[in-house]
Length: 204
Image 1 (cartoon, rainbow, N blue to C red):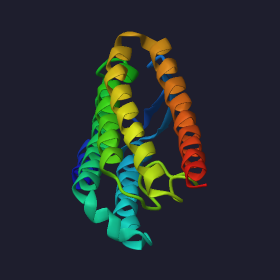
Image 2: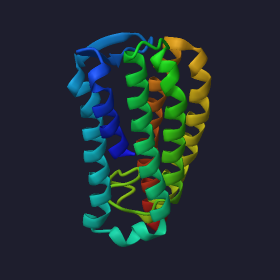
Image 3: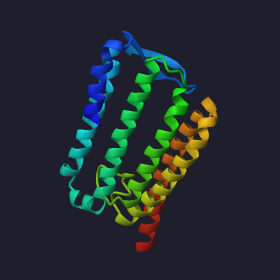
């Protein structure tokens, strides 16, 4: 898929405008442009770099043995991530070829799939240093890790489903989506701390 992104860039390069739309606001309207070489090849390059990094991380993780318990879900997430980047690359190319659509609304279904995939990964994850909800308290207790990441899985899957409704809400929906993600992330950090304190209290 990453190779296809690079090949598509080569094929489309002669037909694209010298300056291409590359960034959209919450309202789905263009608010940023870059030269076409960057627009066509920067995203494939970033996708390749992140993909290779995600392949490397489990190999250098001191707890790499734990990845065996959720490897297929990790691999599945990698595939979804690359697919998401390919989809964004396609949307960007279509937009700059003259197709008119609201970019935010077009991206939200892919965001839903990505977030649901994150939820599936969290649900099966085991304690490690790179993948999952990693706080000082989840990394200090496998029990707290399991509780926090299982709760995180439910939250991310729920957010994925709710995000589909935001396609019809326009800019306010996108803002609500971002605020919701930030608030829930803070909640999960606090939850891991409280669960750790509860566990520590039970041992006294």
